[in-house]
Image (cartoon, rainbow over the protein chains, first blue to last red):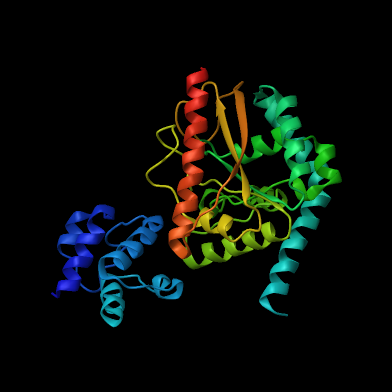
Length: 79
Length: 245
C-alpha cells in the first residue's frame, strides 16, 4: 500500500471504533460501515487530511468520501 | 416549481396544518404532562418572562440550543417557554424541532404528533439529513424559531457530551443572520442520565442564556468552532446548575 494510504489509516485511527477492520483495511473499506467511525467525526477526519497533506477539500468532495480509497484518490489528486 | 418554492410550500403547509391542530394538540399534551405525568417546572413564570423578553429582542427568529437527556425535552421546553395564547397569537415563536427520524418512524402516531408539532425529522442517511438541515436553515433565515440539540443525541452519561457532539448545528448558526442564539439548560431533579422519559412527578429547572457566537474560520472549521462554543456554553451552564444544588 502507498504512503498516503498508511497516513490516512493513522489519521483515521483515533476515530475508528473497529481497530481490527482498520488493521485489515483496503481501498474499499468504508469509514462508516466497516470502521464504525461516527458520522459526525468525518468532519474532523477531513480537516485532519487538509492539515496533514496541506490541501483543501470542498464540501462536495468531502461528501463523496465514503471509503479509504476515496480519500486516497482525492489526496493524490490534490497533493 | 423550483426547489426553493417547493421547500417554502412544504414548510408553510406544515406550519398551517400544525396551527389548525394546535388548539387540540397543545392542551392535550400539556394535560398529559401536568396531570398524567405530574411534571412541574420550577419558576415557570420567570422562565416565560425571560423568553418573552428574548422574543421581543429577537423579532427575526432565533436558534435555540438545549442540552438533551430525554425524548420529550423539546415538548417540555415548548410548554415552559410560553402560554398557549402566546403561541396561538404568534405561532412563529413556537419552536420548530429536529428529532431523529429513527426515534419516531415505527409509530404513525408519533410521526403525526411530530408533523403537527412542527418537527422536521432527521434521517440517518447523511444526504437526507443535510436536506433537513437546509430546511432548518431556511426557517431560521425567514424569522422562525428553531430548536436543535447541539449534542446530537441524548447524553448517556447525564452530563453534557463534550467529546462526541455534532457539528451540523454549527453550520446552522454560521449560515443564520443572527449573531446570538439561546442556550438552554433543562434538568429534572431526579434525572441522573439519559432516559426515554423523565420520571413521574419530576420537577424541572430551566436556565436560559443568550450567547453571542462568532468565528473567524470558514467552511467546516467554522462549523466545528461554532458547535464547540455552543457545547462550552452548555457545559458552563451545567456546572453552574450542579454547583447550585
